[in-house]
Length: 427
Image 1 (cartoon, rainbow, N blue to C red):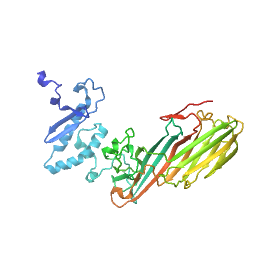
Image 2: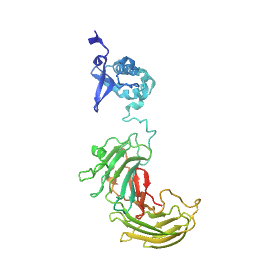
Image 3: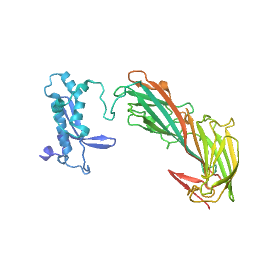
Image 4: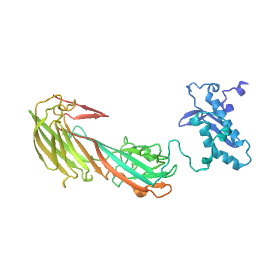
């Protein structure tokens, strides 16, 4: 009778469809035997719409074969619950042998048992396939937070300045044991900028939903999650990036003004830089590179600088203002001068399709150690390590400039779009 015996009756064939996230996971092979549910998900390498006949899906047959093999292994010669529990503890290792990466090689698990040594089964932890070895030595954990700040400043009323902070947390965990567990917490000061767009390494085992849902697309308000940001993970042997993040800081660290006027073969420049009062005034280095593209070599420079030193690279048509390691107490510095150029030679002088006429920029290069613009830090006392021995915890922070431009305010301003730089130029 078709109504009773048809193969289209899924419940009669122990093949089910499970609702998952508003969609259906199909096929799922499952049946109940001796109080244990046996289930597997066969791989279907053909279109599922329209749903193909079960008889045409070879993986369904292999799924049944595997589950029946597991059932036979668990209950063949079983005398009590202790033997059943022993076999259940052996099952994960057996499946790695009989069905590696989901490919069924041998449904006779007893045969696989006879061919492998289960000395490691009694160990509380198994060596994962992605971890090739173990560490031997003094336990130590190193955490480094690096933030890069980008900025485009125009000093124009009709075009807003832009800036962005991108952070990366790098870890190196030298810990003994097969699978040591570590938890690192990132914290912010009271006035710190919340972390957003957080991406984590696959070794992170769990995350607070508030961490995953914080996005730079949303407006930042007082309700934004501001930590602590906890990352539990089982570290690999090598150094790795635990997470990346962005943040919407209220102001760029250095505000700049750049004006360039062209008078025959001479250029007059005026530059003002101001370090924001909230930024740590202790640089590893700080330089302003002022290139002059599409011109001849520099033949003469007259300048006045309020702070730092100016280096002239004549053949490269480049000025480098070495600001040093600290801004003065006023937090403001200035440079003005007149530059004269020689005859232009296309072979030697630097050329650029964007910096034509009055379109020009200066680029800041700086690095500040033991500081982040967001205020993000990893407290040594908040690091939890679940392994033998007390590890040495080391934490580092640094802020680095990246694509930090200040454009000539007298020229048509460049417009940024993604990674492209578009400019309105006039001859």
